[in-house]
Length: 221
Image (tube, rainbow, N blue to C red; front, side, top):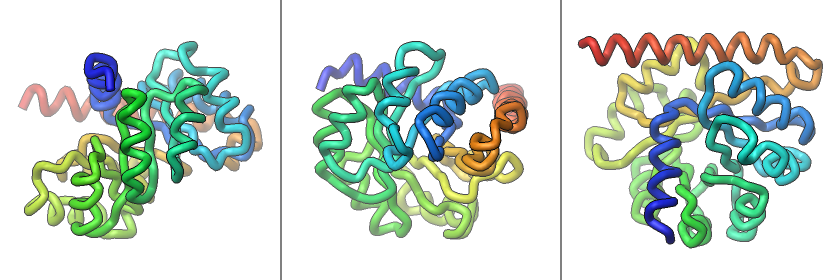
């Protein structure tokens, strides 16, 4: 691992706070969706590897948009290399696969492992996850669940996704999470397929405006 490169990527991701998670019906929808996310104010975007043509979408935008670009739904170590070759700078998986951590860190990529229970969350962190993605967060109990988990596991940096909306996400930040992933509630694959990127951008702008106000209020407080 190249520590300086790894730390730079991790810092950019942490500073972004909100992540656009794009699970689209085509590579072209993913490419357009990433552009819309950035125009809406997002500084981190993730394309899931089960999007058709995901690697092609990543390679088309990596280094060309003003955001850190990552790959999600990474389930095997070989997918890490595929994503890296396409330009991904961070890796996200919905499950605990220690081999993915090893593969990502060997390429200086921050990695998030997915987990649900306190035991899984602890195991993911011990396996080397830089963040643990609590998924599906809203179904598990929302911010209250996060607060309970962070009681005994207060040293684990958390990323939440699954049921996150523009209306509920600030509660997760209040509960102590570092990263929040927005999927269908903002970056709707159906809207993208219909070409309604203006609506996706409107939703993205709303998320980022709320975040700006939240950060300002807490800085003043």
